[in-house]
Structure formats: structure tokens, C-alpha cells
Length: 417
Image 1 (cartoon, rainbow, N blue to C red):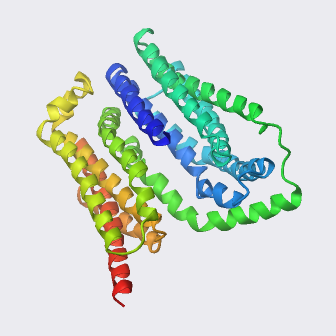
Image 2: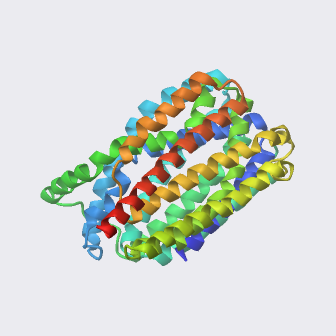
Image 3: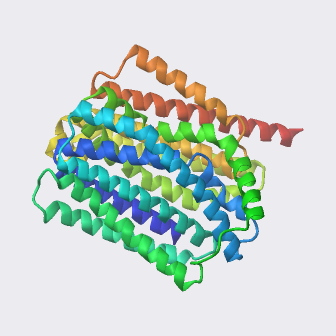
């Protein structure tokens, strides 16, 4: 059921995204892509390893409501501090890029304010969702997710179809997502009250200090990789916003949006395969299972990629006439998504078996590939920018599959010994 809700969220989010691409003016869609990137960066800064702290901090005391609430509150208090720090990092980037692209006026300022409001609500949503998940209120989370997806879809459609296109269309579209977040947060808070979760006192000073020490112990080794991966997730948009044009930024965002179709396969695979791989005993059967799973996963996504390579004009219809000229490079966006999803699939396979060694080394490897690409090709046009994305995703995929092959050989050597 949880996987079904996630898949539904991806589908509805994709439909809403395509509506925005089609009906929002290209200049405003460029600003939309930029503001969403700013929000993603700020959320990522708050998540430098802390997202992995709640479950191990709670431990076996998952039915102890005061402890669960208090422990999660300690974690999210740190995320609140990092959110304040994220403003110091992202706001200068926002000012520089806004001036460079000439984004100003009441509509843009309002849209930026809506993003800040949505950011604050999203962090509160995350806190409530983590608490309810640990306490086992899965039904509440499912119902809330269904409602949020439905409200967002309805509000986006209303903003695009019922309101006239104006300088405030961008703010209206972003406001639709903020309204959905507010509705979801309201339901989660009601659930807190109904289940006796609300009103829990903070942890005693001794327990709070012990919890903080454990949080820092868990998060410290994850900070550098977490920062790296958060930045890598938006690096193409980041580079275009600094060195490209508004039209190029809109095109990168639109092509990335349609390539998100491949995420559906990723979510289904995560739901069906990883629990089986995690529980399977070591041996030839496990190796065969992993190989077949990866062949099926890459094979299915490759079929979609080939359709984008051979029949791009049909795919580009989903983006509308504004982006028809980008049909020849659509395959590059699909290839980037295929490679990055494959890298994530390989990484998740390793993590599901508890094999996380040598992951820090991916940072210099990917950075070397990126710097080399920029030195040779630059990012002067859309094709070069998309090529940078392909090079980045390919380096991630090569590294993770090298680690997967190393894991195979290591376990085979142990079996043969």
C-alpha cells in the first residue's frame, strides 16, 4: 500500500508537472525551475546526515510515545538550525541569479515568498511524518498522502486553467503546492491530537544531551557524502542558472520533467525487489537474483530510453510547442535519468546487504569527471549542458556498478575459501 501511494504520488506529480510545463510561459517556467532548485538545496542542507538519525536514535522504543516525539524533536531542532544556515548560503545565490536573469517585480517576489513558506511547512511535514511512521500510523500517512496528491493536482489545474495568465501565474502555481502542504500538515496535526501524540514534554536535560551526542555520532560521517549528493542532484540546473540563459534553464527543467517518467520504474523496483534482496541468504541464488533484477531493471528503462531516442517527436508532444525544438536532445535527458537511477539501484542493492565501504571515494571520482568535461566542452549551449548531465550520471553509475562487482567477487571468494 505504501509503495502504491508513492507510485501514485510520482504519477500525479508528473502529470501536474507536465501541466505546468505546457501552460506556464517559458520565462516563468525558468524562474519556477530556479525557485524549486533553491528550495531543494535548502532542504538538502537541513538533511546533512540528520535524516538517518531518527530511527537509530529511537531504537527499540518505538511504542514509547514521549521518547519517540522527544528524540525526533531533538533531530529536527538541528534541522531547524541548519535551515537558518541554508538561508545564508542560498539567498546570495538567489540574489545573483535573479539579477542575472532579470527576474523581478511583484509576481516574482511573491513567488519567492511562497517558496519560503512552503519550505517551512515541508520541514514540519517531514517531522510529523517521521513520528507517525515510527509509531506505526501507516494508515494515517497513506490517507494524508492521497489527500495531498489530490489537492495539489486540483489546485495546479485551477491555477493554470481558471486564472488568466499574468505575471502572477508563477506565484499561483507555487501557491497550489503550498496549499496542498498546508492541508497535509493540518491533517497530520489532527492525527497527533487524536492519537495522544501532541503536547508531549521535551526530553529531560540529561536525556537530551545523550540524544544530541548520539545524533552527532550518527550524522558526522554522513555529512560530506550528504552535502555532495544533495548538490549533485541539482548541479545541472545550478550551472545553467549561473552561466546559461533563462530559455536554457526552462529547457533543462522541462526535459528533466519528462524524463522523470523513469522514476515510476525505480519506485516499483524499490518496493518489490529490495526487501527480497535484503532477506535472501548469501550464495549463488542471491547472486543470480541480483543479476536478474538489474538486467530487468535496466532493460525496462532502456526500452523507454530507446523510444525517446527513436521517437522523440511523440514524447515532446507532452511538453507542448514551447519546447518542440528540443526533440533532438530529448534522449540525453532520458539517458541521464536512466544512468542515475541505475546508479541508485546498484547503491541500494549494496546498502540492503550492509555493504557501504568505499562510498566516500565516489566524490573525487565524480568531481574529476565533471571538471574534465567542463574543461573540454564547457556549457555554452543546451547540448553541452545535457552532455554534462550524462557525464555526471555515467560516472555515478560506473562507480556504483564497480562497487557491486567488487561485492560479488568478495562474497564469491569467501564462499570458495
